[in-house]
Length: 403
Image (cartoon, rainbow, N blue to C red; front, side, top):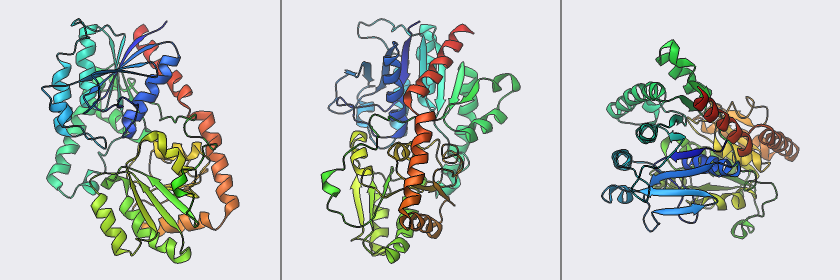
């Protein structure tokens, strides 16, 4: 039975389908795959400057809403901010179809917290089933990420309230990692625990493929290439990678570090590059569309993911899908998709020296790089394609409707 599905998140693709961060990448890939499976999907998101109110992207109806222009003005492709979240939530009380009537949905699927509440608001008017996805959490790590302890404490309290609140207000709460799912289960009454399930992230194996040709701009690089594709925020640990890369360069003087992404830590990272005297070895590429990332990764000898906290890391999955060996932090969310280090090199988080050792160990052995790349690729094909993930989530939808 085909379903009418509302996919709801404050950030979404522009008119060309370009994506900024991981949550909206998850949401749009899921939406596209559900369309392929015969469902009608509307992606309800916030307004974007210079983009239309409505667009059709690979069969997905994208509806961009605004609230007196505040959602458009608060647009940041790298991350959400409170103004955009609050305005989006307020607008959800008044969401209507283009003809001014209520849009009919069977499922309203909201991602993270404020869009999860918006899904509840829109879904209740449609008598739809409510699904909420939580894409990991910083709950255990706010004190490491934020220097302001008052703000860190506030965010912890908000997560402690909102996650179980949305469990109670949704038919199912999906988590993209096991660690926070178990934490939330401890916060709710026994009767609600069965509503909490874990479905790890997926990757677009058509886009991220070993067959992708390298970007011409990096073909001239002659040394070993280490690459990371991350938002430049504290939790992603790129500073740690730059600090450790000095040790890599000591062993491989012509090694090049490509940093793809942008964010509030860019200036700090550039300062660290200068401090470590790595200006000849480091390339700050900036933010590029997700569609272009494969052409960069295809030239990488090693992909580094030095995060402090991750859900099931999309960056790791993308590298694995391209048969690239990965050095990553030994944290929940990365352990889970790498079979606890069977198909990558895991190192302690926020340890520049150990991170450098992991990179160097792979640069020393082409055979190990190829073996890890092969194992990671096989793992992706078996468990992490979007076709497989859409089937798992589709089953959640049907179970919610039947119960």
